[in-house]
Image (cartoon, rainbow, N blue to C red; front, side, top):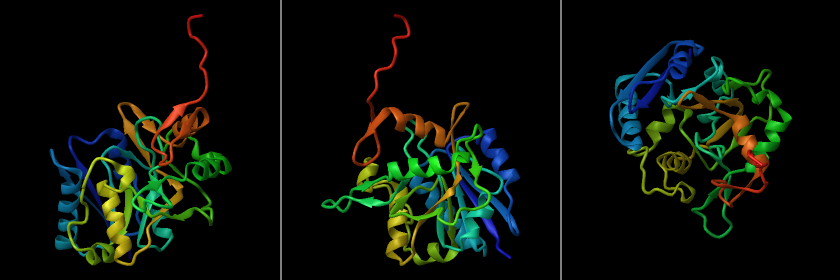
Length: 251
């Protein structure tokens, strides 16, 4: 029986989208929730909760779920279904141009530079229009066989990790070394790098979208597609310059 601990680092009180997600999330066996609240760095919070998970539980799996996440009730079951040790749901940054948080491409010269597969993600969504939904929290059913993509770097917005991965990494697991995420300096980047250096592959499940809440809105695939339709992305997929002339609202 798989036992899963849902772990959350929160600077403040979780919102109702998140609360509903946690209470309705389906699990194959025992499910435990643990959170760390208060002002702290993202890396510090993740490291503290991993230390607790390894030192105070014998659970097989840890689901890292950000306190601004909204997920479908079948999210955990779908991530577990791949039988891989480290897999995240597809998520989009919550600020324009809402790029996908997955990196599959290395710069041919600067190996520390990572790019997002913008066009590939857009084409995937085009093949699966069910991913464009008002709730922004989706699980495709049935599961497409080609939905599991290997990534060199990814996020921890909704990340399922097996205990063996955490045990194989020398702490700290999360380290923020700078401000420029595209150069691999984000705390999530560090975790993915360490996991891969420990011999584990890292994946994103394209059949699952985890919404990203901001204010009263939930960001998802539709928000990314709108920007993709009117913008030109830079090499890292972190910015989209508007390439169309919008009509004058007051001619």
